[in-house]
Length: 371
Ligand SMILES: NC(=O)c1ccc[n+]([C@@H]2O[C@H](COP(=O)([O-])OP(=O)(O)OC[C@H]3O[C@@H](n4cnc5c(N)ncnc54)[C@H](OP(=O)(O)O)[C@@H]3O)[C@@H](O)[C@H]2O)c1
Image (cartoon, rainbow, N blue to C red; front, side, top):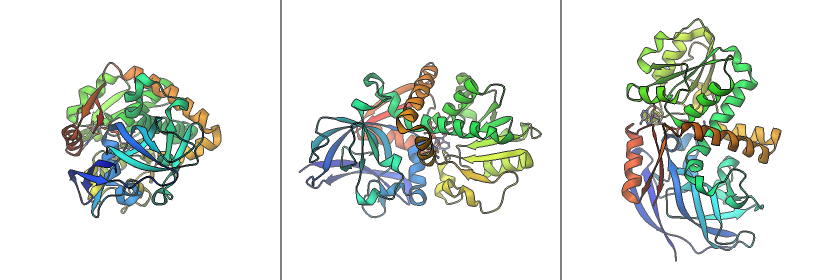
C-alpha cells in the first residue's frame, strides 16, 4: 500500500501548517497514481487558501476535518495506472496538492489531456480538473519546466486580462493602475500592456516600500507609486484599476480618489490575504461590495471563466499556443531580474509557505518546491 506525505493547513488559521502521512487506497478501475515531482508556490496559492471556502479550493484535495490542502500547479509522474488509456511512466502537468502522491480518477482521456473525474471535483471549474500530458502539450519544453510551473497559471491570467481589457477598449480609461505591482501576475499584465498597448494606456504600479526598487528594475511601468501615495495620482484622467492586492482599505482609497473617473474596477487577487481571510475583503464577492464605493462597481475577474470563453472562440489548442508564445516572451524579458529558486523537503516547503503568509518573500525569486 502506498503512503503519501501531505502538507495540510488549518483552514481557520492559515499560518498553521503541518505534515501528515496518509495511507492511500488501492487503485480502482480507471484510477492512476501520481507522484508529485515539483510545484510552484506563490501568493496565488495563499489566496486559494484564503478563498478556500468562498470559491471552493478546499474541495479539490480533501483533508481531515478543519484542515485543508492548498492546491498548487506543477508536474507529476504517473507511477501506477489502472487505466488502459493512460499508462504508467507518463509525465503530466496540472493542479496538485502539496503532497508526495495523489490518486486521480482519469476520465475523458485524449492524446493530450485527461480530467480528474472524481465526484468531489465534478462541480469545480474545468480548467482546474484538466491534466496535460506533456508529450502532447503545445507549450512544453523539458528544460523549461520550472518557468512553466511558475508562470503558466499566473501569466495565463495576465494574458486573459489584457485580452479582456483590450476587447473592451479599456472601458475608456487612459491609465491602468495595478496594485501589488511586484506580483508575477501583475508583472505579466504590465509587460503585455507596456509592449503591446503603448499609446493606448499608461501603466501605473502601486506597491509597498520594500518592493519599489524591484518594480522599477522591471521597466514595465510608466510610473510607480507607493500605497501610501495614492493621492498623488492624477484623478482627472479616466483610469481603470486591476486589483491584485485585495486590501479593502486600499481599494476604497483608490475608488474614493478617482470617483467618477474610475471607469472599471477589475478585482483579480488578494496578495494581502489577511483582509480576505478576516472576511473583510472580497475576491469572488467583489460584485457585492458591502458599502458601495465611488466610481465603477468592482467586478471579479475569474480566469477559468475567461478560458472557457476564449477556448470556445479560438479553440483550446490555439488559446494554449497563443498563451504559450506570450509566456515565453515574458519569461525571456523577466530573466534579468527574476530567478528560480529550488527547494526540497519539509523545511523548504514550510519556509516558503511561511514567508508568503508573513509577506516576507523577495519578489525577485520564484519558488519551485518538491517534497
Ligand atoms: N482571479 C484569478 O483568476 C487569478 C489568477 C491568477 C492569480 N490571481 C491572483 O493574483 C495575485 C498575485 O498572485 P502571484 O502568484 O502573481 O503573486 P506573487 O508573485 O507571489 O506576489 C508577490 C507579491 O505579493 C505581495 N504580497 C505577497 N505576500 C504578501 C503578504 N503576506 N502581505 C502583503 N503583500 C504580500 C507583495 O507585493 P506588493 O508589495 O507589490 O503588494 C509581493 O511582492 C494573487 O492574489 C492571486 O490569487 C488571481
